[in-house]
Length: 224
Image 1: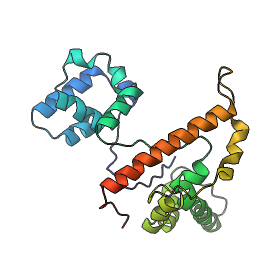
Image 2: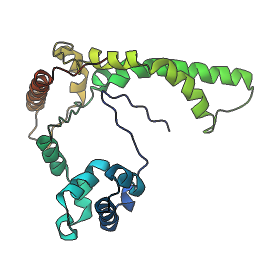
Image 3: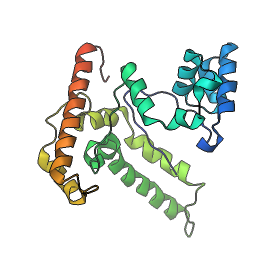
Image 4: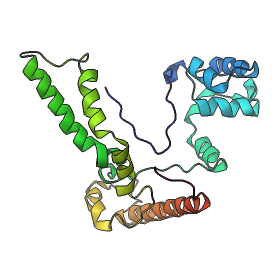
């Protein structure tokens, strides 16, 4: 499996442990290392913990009692939202059935990537008659295809054409999202299509207003 990612402001991604391996003892060991002077980023990598979570608990001086059930640290969505709000982080979530229009990768990279990857596979099969592409061949076939389409220019166009950045509220019209109405379902008999549409419009409007305010506050943000 190949994961593809484009971001406006990318950070390094470290190998993590599976959630089943996260436990309170690991967090306490990690905090102890941080208290001993080992950098938080190094410690997070060592124990396979999310950097932001480890940093937050280390700064708070969390004790075993304060941590409570360790599962809550990683799965409590309300805590994530509160932390984001307190630290000026805007969480942008795409509405259902809109990734083909609002996901920068879908719009600017994936289409070309599929074509180039297929070309690499065809070229490989012509030079290796009867050979089936296996998991060990994927990386060397995927790399040249990826490098052709995953360019800075395409990434920038992906964010621009979707209206995510620079923010453009006029990129899409209501009719562009009409297909998603066919899959709207009532939940507990209370949410009608009109109610869902009203809620979506309100949430998106609020989010765009927040992002516009952030853009005015930070005029130095550019896509170079």
